Length: 73
Image (tube, rainbow, N blue to C red; front, side, top):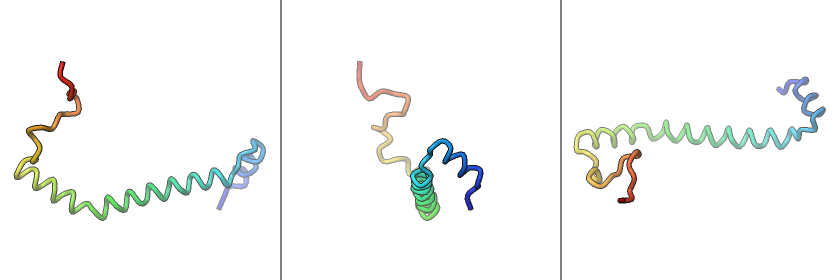
């Protein structure tokens, strides 16, 4: 339920409540989808991490750490 004072203030400042709610709703859905996807795939991420810990990363020899540049001077 929406707060009546918030609605009155929105009207006073000519805020399009429908547009604000739509944007917030879309953001909430995107965030929920991401959270659900991460939860559903947590076992796969753990398995992949375990594999890398045991075998090493297959591209370790060519991966550039985030602090390094891929360009040579």
